[in-house]
Length: 489
Ligand SMILES: *[C@@H]1O[C@H](CO)[C@@H](O)[C@H](O)[C@H]1NC(C)=O
Ligand SMILES: *[C@@H]1O[C@H](CO)[C@@H](O)[C@H](O)[C@H]1NC(C)=O
Ligand SMILES: *[C@@H]1O[C@H](CO)[C@@H](O)[C@H](O)[C@H]1NC(C)=O
Ligand SMILES: *[C@@H]1O[C@H](CO)[C@@H](O)[C@H](O)[C@H]1NC(C)=O
Ligand SMILES: *[C@@H]1O[C@H](CO)[C@@H](O)[C@H](O)[C@H]1NC(C)=O
Ligand SMILES: *[C@@H]1O[C@H](CO)[C@@H](O)[C@H](O)[C@H]1NC(C)=O
Image (tube, rainbow, N blue to C red; front, side, top):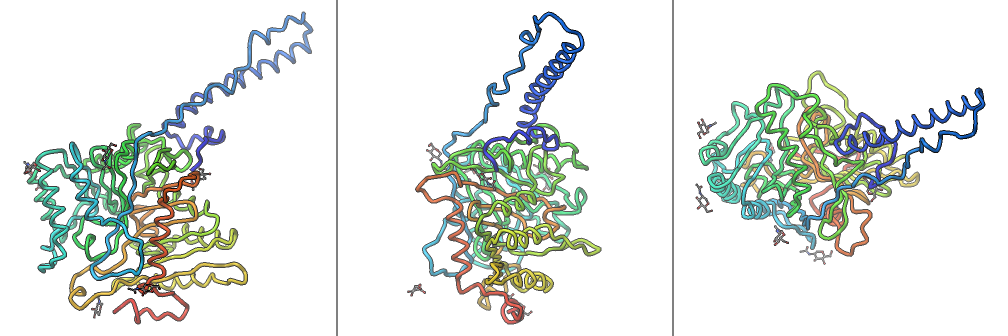
């Protein structure tokens, strides 16, 4: 994310973003004029050489345009944006740490309380009550409260839900209830569109407040699964940009194919090269939203993969990554495919730039064993004498016998990265599918220019990572680690 717009980017047609397009046209005009004028001057000079003339040169009547003309107006945002990290800490998990954040449950309730005109939600699937498990789990109460409140709102204001087309077996109770309450629901058939799924999880409220993070619309995501997200209040500029991603899903809910190119109204001016400048908690910040897969990125949008690669590249001392799944392969495609874009980048910066790389990965009953082979390979890039420092730890959410009965729970589902400069909060696992055919998105926050005393998102996220990394719930992965001992318990 650069604040200025280097000249070469203005020439890069492939970016084609609204902003750049405007400035490109502007600059191209200047360049054409300038080039035209200088060609003219050269020709005239040559002519002057060849055909000597009276020195009443016409060059003064064809002035070279002043390149230092006004720069295009960098639109910056003056909203009093307030950003809050939010977490779900599974029942029973205790950290010996002062690092705590408001709960995702509370933040969703707050967002609904703030809502005056609209709530737009992008989602993977909905199971906010424990009807799905046929249990009477008291910790489902938060999910049920969210669902009831949303149903209430659906009668009073515009509630739109974009959801991945549910499979046969998937429960539809929540969606039916919301539909009957007046919500507008569109199913997005990502399987047909890209062979992936809509995996994104975010909210846009009143085109002013947003939530984005790892939590699914699942009661377990509030009380039984460890999640991390971020809420930004009072931030219409950022909300408007996230709305463009929502509108793309909304559009796809009624479309049999993906537009290429996407119509102008989906394009953005904000990306890794020309981020949105805004105050976050009074701290000057550069932010942008990335999206995947590339076919869902309208002009100007940085793809999620490009944003990850560039954030890693930009690091100067460390890259901390907390994701549920990490694989340098496609996970769900056949035939098998190796996919090492991120893996290569991590090894590269560890080697070329002596960056400290830490990966905090989840393990639980459903983890594929092959993940550990690749993680061990990555963790073998460790040789302090030669300044090679990649380390991997596995985070296990312990479960009581009763908690073990809850299917698909008790796991660390976080999807973020923090470097010495940047906070990246996403919705995707880190394997090929999530960048090639599955829809996801991320918020990237850059506050490096800040001199503010208020703590930055980066420092807060780093503290979360360090809390988890150093906790009793994480175990270093070594070449001898036997996963049966601590993952499959
Ligand atoms: C963060 O912002 C600084 C300037 O404020 C810029 O130099 C740097 O490239 C940005 N980093 C990323 C990863 O965008
Ligand atoms: C937390 O850690 C501190 C310092 O390591 C220790 O003194 C304290 O007893 C710990 N508290 C708990 C509840 O484990
Ligand atoms: C509208 O909101 C009020 C107050 O939140 C709630 O009591 C009522 O049920 C809602 N109306 C509808 C039609 O859902
Ligand atoms: C949604 O509600 C409408 C009535 O408002 C009904 O016609 C439609 O069948 C419902 N759709 C689903 C999927 O329940
Ligand atoms: C948004 O800003 C207004 C005006 O500063 C303030 O009253 C309100 O509490 C803010 N909303 C949130 C959710 O922070
Ligand atoms: C994992 O699987 C084992 C064997 O099937 C079972 O005994 C254990 O309870 C499971 N653990 C969890 C957390 O589901």
